[in-house]
Image (cartoon, rainbow, N blue to C red; front, side, top):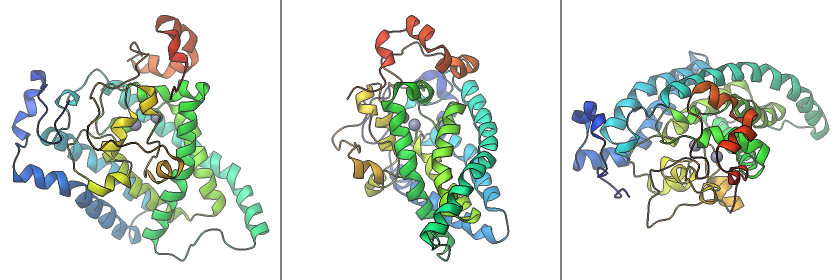
Length: 329
Ligand SMILES: [Zn+2]
Ligand SMILES: [Zn+2]
């Protein structure tokens, strides 16, 4: 088990290439542990929002997504939570492929969702008689509100994926990760991208959320998401009770699916508090042995990972019958 701070004892000598970047216990490490999360928000959300007048908001959000990749690559080598999670475990190839597939699925999703949700929005507006969205609020506030609203739907679709076996087949791809690092938040089956994206975005379109506010939500979500799966030894204090953070999300990746049935929030843990699924023990940290307890032989190669939901029975016969149960509380 890792200590609450400092380097973990189980170092993998094969990952020593970046040893020179490692921050030893001292004031610099303590300062970075506490300040990195809020500072990143100020720089990328605050700074990015200033660009909205001059650039397309989605472009700003995409820029932040891309810029933070090399930054977090280096940060994880300077301030790792688990030494064993540094370096490829044969997962990078599949993760990159899944990101590309997610991008393609997302490109299909946007127009299809608009097509389906716009008539619903028009019907709602005509029956309610007033605008359903506070479009006169400052853009940052609209983005924050969109995060809260979107996360409500994201919470329930994520929870359904754990509790309903047909959806668990798809979501298992995400939980098959054997380590967490800044990039594998996107280790998501393309079908999950389509399902979650539709459930999340359709209500926004129906509520009449302006495109700029959607882009602001995307920008804030990019920063939260970059931290959510990162392998960084951070101290967030009360923010662990607000955001879906690396500390509380590690419990969601527990090999024990009963423990993993907590902290469903995508950006926030607000709805976990409301619906009783928040879990963050104060006296211990989770193991860095993650994955799915009853699926030790989950496929690793990209195409096999993509195909797993459709060859589930064959896959089960090669694993254990207990794997068909998504969640046992
Ligand atoms: Zn999950
Ligand atoms: Zn996750």
